[in-house]
Image (cartoon, rainbow, N blue to C red; front, side, top):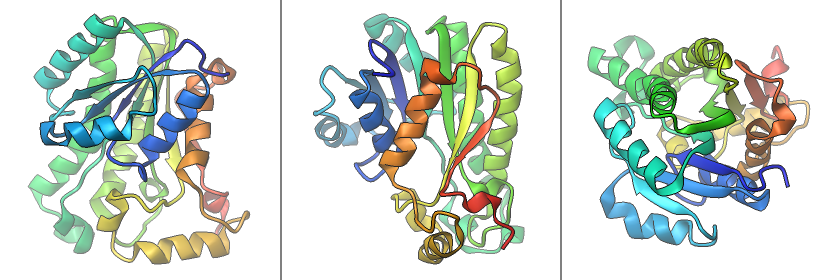
Length: 257
């Protein structure tokens, strides 16, 4: 098993259809002990029910993934109760609905800042706080989630595409900063998946249809498939890979039309 006796923190789990859940399932099946953060104390019972089959896992509420003090407090508690971790999966992103439904040119200053703060800065903060608190074991691997809309215009993705571009650039700089400590940092770019977040993107069903028609494999991806790629990135099998955006999208990103 690729992650046997490894402790993996997964940030941002929401429901069983999420990419984070697919990653958790693969990591657990490969021997990992799982730790989760989620948003909203009111969701505690739902998250505990969601993660109950991951024996030995623990859950922690984190309402402000881009707030320095909140992340520090939760990370200190995680380290105190679990010791150091071997990997972190950052599955956190958000943009205001109006900024996804209207043309990008109408993005408000507040909406622009919000999307970048939650979707990109939160990962920078995660990496910095984990390092400062000496929370990471030797050869730890940090993985964040991105999407093809960071490099190409996808109608309805709008400011989230800009935020994901900032996230991918951050991955490269973080990889350089943390590489001296033997810590790897990568982004995983999934093909479109029907998650709760995806419902906020206009005509999302059309995007999935196009991927099925145009991608070399002529099929969409599943959370379980993305989970397996994340497990690889978290494992020793990928210990020569850092600073990269790894596409798992049935090859759609290589196509010119």
